[in-house]
Structure formats: structure tokens, C-alpha cells
Image 1 (cartoon, helix red, strand yellow):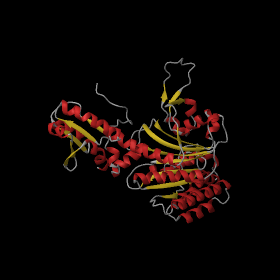
Image 2 (tube, rainbow, N blue to C red; image 1 turned 120 degrees about the vertical axis):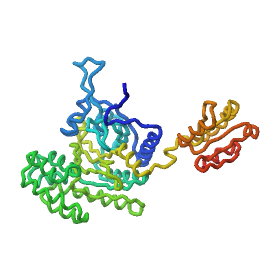
Image 3 (cartoon, rainbow, N blue to C red; image 1 turned 30 degrees about the vertical axis):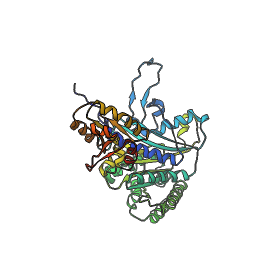
Image 4 (cartoon, rainbow, N blue to C red; image 1 turned 90 degrees about the horizontal axis):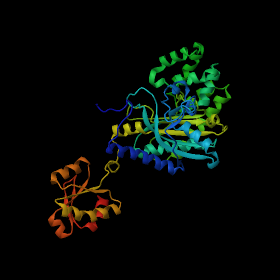
Amino acid sequence: MKPSIPKGTRDFSPVEMAKRNYIFDTIKEVYALYGFQQIETPAMENLSTLMGKYGEEGDKLLFRIQNSGEKAALAPEKGLRYDLTVPFARYVVMHRDEISFPFKRYQIQPVWRADRPQKGRYREFYQCDADVVGSDSLLNEVELMRIIDTVFTKFGIRVSIKINNRKILSGIAEVIGQADKIVDITVAIDKLDKIGLDNVNKELADNGIPQDAIDKLQPLFSIGSLPLSQRLSSIREMLRDSDTGLKGIDETEYIIDTFNTLTTGSGSVNTLDLDLTLARGLNYYTGAIFEVKALDVEMGSITGGGRYDNLTGVFGMPGVSGVGISFGADRIYDVLNQLDLYPKEAVNTTKVLFVAFGEKERDYCLPVLSALRAAGIKSEVYPDIVKMKKQMAYANAKQIPFVCIVGESEMQDGKVMLKNMATGEQQLVSPDALPDILMRG
């Protein structure tokens, strides 16, 4: 049998895992910097927890799990989690008596979607979420935008951070007389980058939106190139009779203005900008919505999120507002690969390899090896007594930057021969001096 893996999934080599851990560790570090704490939830949830939270299209992409080990008639149906936000809402309700609000949590785990695999789109992938629940303050949105800016600045990725507001979209639906079609409108608009304006208009018509209402939507698609102040002025005029829409504009202005104030002079190259065509298709968003794309590679959204006012209500805990973001780790991985932005220290897992000509020489290396590890230097010894060529090939294959060579003469002198694998330079050093040399190297 020829071994294979399911489409839309991937194996990761040690080098690839080192790169992925660099991504996860960087995001964790920034989340912790902003006061977020980590939780985890199960890979599978009861299907009743997941269904109806992602819209009709999202429900179709849920992986269902066949009941096993339980009486089928009694066991609830289960599914693999589609995202981390709905399980988080379930977690908040179940653990409400243990949580201090506002609750700031982050979660880095895989999710599964029965999607059609293609470049940048996988059936199994990691999300790196941060959410704040139990607070209505727009400062939370600003903080999350600052987290996005900080993370991508650390990665060296230039990004475009786009913001919109579901209240603005609801206001648009109101003023064109289609308030009851808000879901259909947002789902269609969200596909603008993928299918183009003509197909968006066709989908709107196919969903029963009258032509005169579709015509009223067209200015929304044409003012994106205007300066921010003009876009805001135009949309205010369009929504002058919608209190909901005007509130959405006020919220968006506050978030952008406060973000820009906090980033002024910070050296950030990223900007937060209003995109009136940004809709994000998930039904649970009720306020600000965000999306991030890399500027220097062709790739879909690499981060997204938004405000949801009552997601916990479906689990029996109404009135708890929340806002969150999710970094798409797998797409960020691909972007960093394409731009070759991984720092060397993130990829090189071992700093030094000990190679020896014989058993006595190898045994001589072991205390030195232990001392290096005690000093926090990643070190290993080649375990078998084989030709030096094979041991050096091992070091090259693992891209180990330094090799300690020990033979009869080194043992007699009580030293080791340290070789820089990049330059070929060799120096005879004492074991006591080795940690300082390697830390500097």
C-alpha cells in the first residue's frame, strides 16, 4: 500500500516545525504582553454547539464524527471544531463562575473545515485566537489592532489592516429597503475579491435582492479609492436616516483615530484603513470587523476577526459582548517562506555537534556536552563510531553551525577542536571557554 494523507492536510518536517514554533511563540509572546491568558478546548464538540453559528455555507463545511463507543441512540452527534470562537463562547458559559470579567484569553489549536483544498486553503489548519469578553469598550478593538500591528512588525511582514462595521452594513441594508436580507448581502459582498463585482451583483439578484436595491449598493463599491475623510463623509450621507449605520461609523472612526494616535512615532509601517466592502461572512459579528492581508505576496486573508455582542446567548448566557481576532498560522507560514523572513536562530535547532574518532574520545565529550546543555546551549553528540565524513555530513544535513572534533591529541591537551561550519575556521579551545564562545557565535 502506498502511504498517503488526506487532501488538505500536511506533514511537517523538523525544520518546518521549527518555523511553525517561531510563529506560535511570537504570537504567544505578544498575546501575553497584552494581558491575555491561554486556554484549550477539545478538538470535537457536540454538533449542537457548532450548528447554526457559521451561516448556511459554514454548516456545510463542518466535519461530522460518527458516534463510536457509545449507544448511538443516546449519544449526541459530534463534529470537529470549525473555529475557536464558538467553542470559546461555550467555554465561557460553562466556566462562568470561575472567570473574572472582562476575560482575555488566547487559544492556539487546529480547526477543521470540509473545504475544497487549494493554494493557501487547507482542511486542517491552526488558528491563533485572542478574544475579550465581558466588555463593551472599543478600546478592546484598538488593543487587538495593536496586537496585529505588533505581531506582523516582529515578523517583518508588511500588511494592510482593513476595518469595517456590521452596523454600517446593517444600515446600508436598511436604507436600500432590504434589512431582512442583511445575511445574504454580507455573504455576497464578502466574496468581492474572489468573484468580482458582476458575480456579486448576480448573487445578490439570485438571492432575491431587487435590482433597484442592488443599484443603490453600487456606490459602496466605487468609493474605496477616496481619502478616508471623503469615504466617511460619503457613507454618512448615504446612512443619514439610519441610526444603526451612523453608530457604526462613529465606532469605526474612534478605532482608527485611537489606533493611529498610539502608533504615531512607533516605527510601524502598517496602517488601519476603512474598507466598506469588507463583510466577513460569519453570522455572529455585530460590530467592528477586521481583515489583514500581506502586501508583498499573493495570499488570502492572514488574520481576521470582529465584535460579537451575544454569542454566549445561544448557550444560555445572554448580554455578554466580545471581540476577537484570529491569526491564520498556516498562511503566515507560507508568507514567511515566500519572503524568506525566518531568523536563522529560529530554524537552527542544534548549535553544536560533538564528533569523535573513537569510543574513548566520545566518552570524553559527554561531560563537556552536559556542561553546554546546563548553560542552555542546544547540543548533541553523534552516537555511533563511524567515519568522520559521515558525522560531518550529519552536521551539514541538520545545518548545525558548529562542530566539536575530539581525537587523541585533543584529549591529551584537555581541549576540543571547535569548527565553524560556515567559514571552515577551526580553533583549539578548553571546555570551560566553550559556552562563552558559542553564545557569541
